[in-house]
Image 1 (cartoon, rainbow, N blue to C red):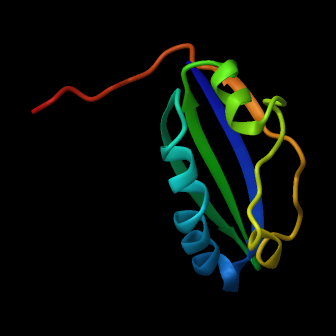
Image 2 (image 1 turned 90 degrees about the vertical axis):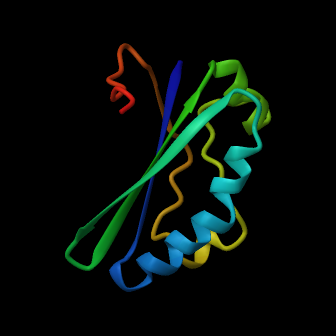
Length: 106
């Protein structure tokens, strides 16, 4: 399994609106992708800025390549993102998932 990690930074006063934007665009798009196994949106306020990280899990880099159109390292952006993001980082990071802790069912 592959973990794909993307980072974006907004002004703190537009962080909630950007989260809404992610919920309307990136998350539904991810949910529809073959080989995609879930995603988590993390956010951290630091002074006047808010950092977001989206961690998505994939069956393989080949599944990521299908989604990105060939280049697995390419960051994916949506039309409204430039209204919120302070920088549009062109690449993402990928990691092999080496282990996991899954809570036991009750």
